[in-house]
Image (cartoon, rainbow, N blue to C red; front, side, top):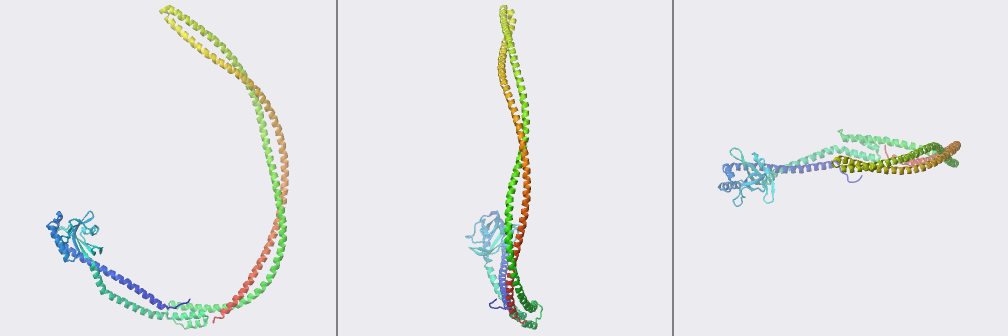
Length: 579
């Protein structure tokens, strides 16, 4: 660390001086604002008293009468002139009466000359209804300083106008120039500020003088401690110890604690330097011994590493041969395993085929039985169709008989109608019966024709069915022969499948024996390969350990040499200390 030195006492005095200066500035600003606020409060109180006094001089009975009219009149002119006179006498900027309606302020009596006065009940431009809220309750109110570009700075004061019964009937407003606040503030500051500044300067000088004397006495031991620190830095530990012994500090404060700490540090450094010198000599002797031993170990490790490398090369070659043979056996094992799995699959397939052929034979036998049953049913159906054809012929003969009877009945009905016509009135009843008999005969003839048509259709269908059944009988006979031949084929197939299944089972058993033998051979090769790999790994580990040992010993040798250099440097440095 370099640069210009500064004493602690000077820095403390500067800091305290700055603090007092800041305190002076803040206090002066506070004095100014407090003085201004006091002047403003005084002016507000005076303005409120003047406004109340003006309110008491107004003729309230005349004002109440004016409120009932709110038109220009002699009463209004008298009130306006009175307010204008009071404004001038009290040095006011403005005086007026007002009322609040719909949250807006309206001017009633303007205390200005007639040519400058505003009209009755005109809206106010500067006054605000919220400032008059408390005035309507019978209280007074004064605003803060208002900044107006036309009229400058002023204060507005509002007081209530009360009737004889105490009711608020209006508001009196007065505006007073705020320049008096500035004048009063300046006057008060001229009186108080010189005394305030003088007291602060006297306090500042007294405090700084007292601190200068006290700090000089308190900080004098620090100069001695600084010289002690310089002696320690230069290595004069014995002289530093003597200086600390002669130092006297009357009070047990932080400086006293610092002196004790420096004394303990100096003593600890003396002990540590003595130990360092002793240790340095011991390290130098030991490092020379270690250096000689590491050289011998390095030579032996180099020879071991060379020998283990040659052994590792031979073992690695044997391991490669064994691993190659093991890989060939694994390929052979895969082929055997594949053949065994294929044989197992064939055996399972032949078992399934045997089961399927058995099921096929059973189904074929059932088919033969069903074909025989169908053949018998078809023959029976053909006989029944023949019987149906014979019965249709019988029905056709009966239909012919019924048709003849119907024709005879129709002829009898015709004869009866003729006889009834001859009988005249006596034969009318018989004519009706003859007509009904004729109708019945016609209906029977029609039904017989329909029956004949149906029977003819049945005979044609029966003939077709007889022909179809003849064809079906021949087809079922042919199908029966085909099913019998298929049954014999399934029987031969079942026998051949059983032979294939037996041969496949024998082949699978032999392949399993071969697979067991191959697994034993492969296990033996794995053991040989594992042993070879273990030997190779062991040789490599020994070789690596030897190389690691060589590297470690080389590093140790370098460290010992570096330690010798460091020890020599430490010894030369420790000689610089006077203990």
